[in-house]
Every structure is written in C-alpha cells, then in structure tokens.
Length: 86
Image 1 (cartoon, rainbow, N blue to C red):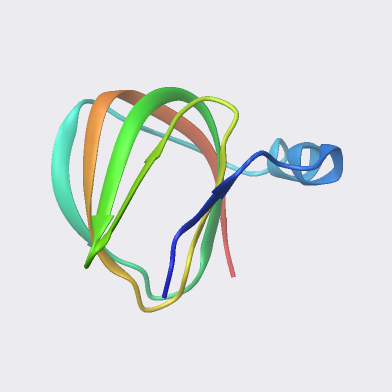
Image 2: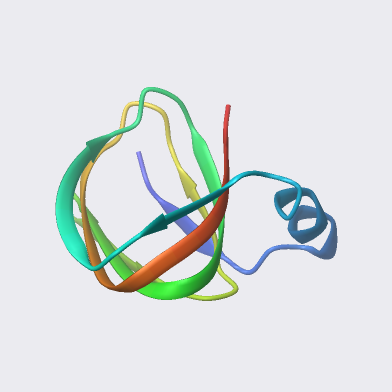
C-alpha cells in the first residue's frame, strides 16, 4: 500500500483544477483514508509517513493516497491543494 508522488499529465492537471481546494497550516496529525484520494499540490511543503514509507511533496506534485492507508501528515509550510476522493 504505497503513496504515489509524481508530476501530473496535462489532462490530470486540468481535471484536478476543477476539484475543491483544501488548506492546512503547519501542523502534524494522524490520518486514515477510507477511500483513495488524489491531490494536486498548489503550495506547501509536506512529509507523510506511512509504515516504512516516507514521502515528501510540494507544489506541482500529484499525490495518490490508497484506500485503507494509515499515516501521519507533517505540514512544514502551509499546504493548499486540489483534491478528489474515489
């Protein structure tokens, strides 16, 4: 159950820009994904730890969190992202 971090295709970027936006100030918190989430990071600096996997992402990254994932978010710089579930 791995978190995927990559650059979006032009089609993915266009689709994600039509999705809602979420923001969070610097903080650290646990999170569980009841369903898959895909997000396009607009700004921020974040590390997410899930078991033995640690991922780092920032502006321009497309991140896919799998359903059932338990992790800890470490928001170093305020994050703003487009997101969709399912």
